[in-house]
Image 1 (cartoon, rainbow, N blue to C red):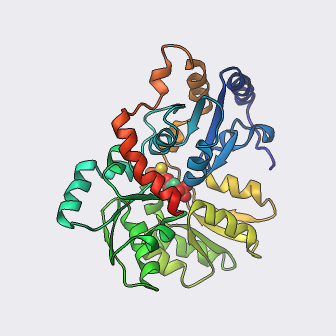
Image 2 (tube, protein in one colour):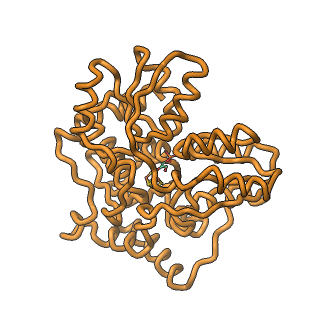
Length: 328
Ligand code: 13P
Ligand code: SF4
């Protein structure tokens, strides 16, 4: 992977972070939506020890030997790492790193749904907070949602909280089964911006390009722009794999802007046209607050960054997350 150019201040921060994480017995996990200088591995000129999609990061969190994990992603992801590793210290450089999907639904909302549809299994997208997860039967990420839905009993599933991802899943599930999905009204404020019209104009400009669309893109956009041409509707990881395997040289990316740096670095011979929309929550994390989180380890400031969930909540939220791991 080629490294991206950094300013001298960034270079100093990167070198300070890489030195300190060894001294503090810490590793840095980074989501693909982080800026290149963060998600690039140390040997590539960045600060990450591991980069991945949300499922990849959850799995990696269970293998980490270091006592401290600096989680460069958003809160619900850092919480998942804590749920899977209650004995480790999980630090997020800015606790304001939220998510419009996670904040669209509460535990009380799930309790009300279960009352309205008794006995119907509740499948929660990983983009939910621990209190919400604790009320659900199973979790899923964008990578394993179809596989998990297929294994749930009965002919109806409550899927929360992304209504567009739910509509996209429903269309694929109903192509082969009679299963119905009851949906919540949440949306990702990044992916919902990929309108049918804007993508159609990119497609007109680049007629040879294939479409790379995340599950969270509105179902109307998918129907209008993907089914007329080549490409994939899938998870972050599916998109990365598909772009590598495809013979095409040009792609239009309908996902978070910084993910294009992952794609460009992985496949430098290919072109990724990216209508650039950033997740404001992911962008709360930067080199400065990563350094501060590292410096806090072992002193009073640590609690400012550390994910703290009470023992009962950790135990209850672990049930649907572990079920997801077993079924995926
Ligand atoms: P992935 O599960 O594909 O990493 O996506 C997480 C996310 O927040 C997408 O917006
Ligand atoms: Fe949440 Fe969307 Fe940001 Fe992903 S991109 S963290 S779903 S707001």
